[in-house]
Image 1 (cartoon, protein in one colour):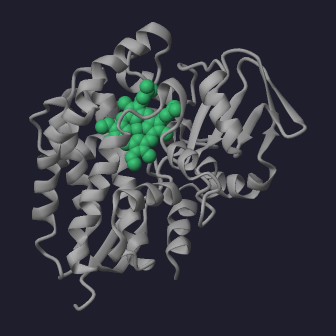
Image 2 (tube, protein in one colour; image 1 turned 180 degrees about the vertical axis):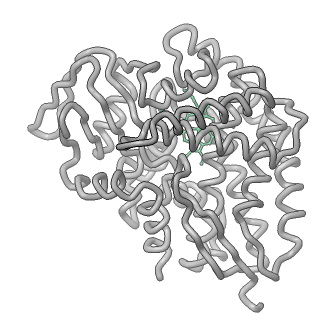
Amino acid sequence: MSARSLDRRVYLRSHPLLFGLISATRPLGAVWVGRTLLVHDAEVYREILTNVPLDREAEGTTGGAALQLGGGGVLFDQAGDEHREARRSLAADLGAEGVSRVRPIWQGVIERGLTQLPGPVDLVPLAKEIAGATACALTGCATEPLVLAEATVEAASNAAGEHLPRLWGHRRVALRALRAADALSALLPDPLDAMLAVAAVNTTLAALPRAAAWCARAELWDQISPELTSELLRVTAPTPILPRVAAAGATIRLGDRRFRIRAGDRLILVARHAAEAHRDTARNERTAAQAVFGAGPHACPGANLARAQLTDFLTALVPHRPEVRKAVAARGTALPGYAKLVMAGSRV
Ligand code: HEM
C-alpha cells in the first residue's frame, strides 16, 4: 500500500461519515450544507480565518470546547486585546529560545525510546511520551509525562465526542467529558497551561507516527530535512478541520460565486484541503505549508516547536530505515492518528 493510501485510511477511519462528506465535497471549493459552509478552497480558508469576525466561544468550535474544558481565557476562545496579551505571554516559551530550552528534553525521550530499534517498536506510546514530556516542560508540570499525555488525550477526545452529532448517549458523553476535564485540571490547575498541553499533545500524537509511516512507505529516509518536515505536515495535515462560527455577516467570493455568511453560521474550514494535502505537489508551497497551522491572529504559536520536534524524531529514525510492521488506525480520538504503529529496522 502506498504512503498516501495508508495515511488516507487513518484519516477516513477516525470519523468516517464526517471525513467522507468532506472528501466528497472537495471539488466544489466551498458549499453550503444547510447553514453550515464547508470550505476547502485555500484562499477562502485564509480569508475567513484572517478577516471574518468569528464567535470564539460558540458551541461546537475549538474555542467553545476550550472554554468548556479550561473555563475561559485560553487563547482559542479569546479575541482582541485580551487575546493579543495572552499570545505575548506565550511568545517567550514557544519562540526560538523556548524551543532550545525544551529540545534536549524531547531529544532524550526519543533517544531512550528508540534503543529497541532495529527490533520492533510501537511509535504511538513513544510519541505520547515525547509530547507529554514537552508539555510537562512547557507548563512546569511535575506529573509523569505519560500521565499528563493520557489526561490531555482523554480531555480532547471526550470534548470532540461531545460535539459530534449523535442519536443517543448525550448524557453519558457529557459526563465523561466533564470527568476528563476535571482530571486534567487536577494535574494542571491553570486553564491556560491545561489548554497548551491539550493543543501540544494531541497534535504531536497525531503528527509524529503518521509522518514516520509516510516516510517508511514512500522510502524517504535519505531525504530527512526541515523542508521534508514541512511537506510531511502538509500532506498529513494533523488538524484536518477547524470548526468555527461566524460572529457577524460577511461576503466571500470564490471565482464568480458569492457566499453570504450571516452571524451564527457554522463554518467547517478544511485545513487538509487548504493545505492541498490531497495533491503530491502543492500549487503554492509556502501558503499550503502554513495552512496546516491555520492563519491570522490565532495561527498556531507552536508551529516552530512542532516542526523542530518532528525533524528530530525522523532524524533519529534514519539510521534504522524502519519499515511499517503493523498499523492500526485510532477511532474516536480528537484528531486522526494511529492507535498502534509498530516499526522495525528494515534488516530485522
Ligand atoms: C503538528 C503539530 C501542530 C499542528 C498541525 C497545529 C495546528 C494548529 C491549528 C490549525 C491551530 C488553529 C489556528 C487557527 O485558528 O488559525 C492551532 C492553534 C494553537 N496551537 Fe497548534 N498545532 C500543532 C502543534 C502545536 C504545539 C506543539 C503547540 C504548543 C506547544 C500548539 C499550541 C497551539 C495553541 C496554544 C493554539 C491556539 C492559538 C490561538 O488561538 O491563538 N500547537 N494549532
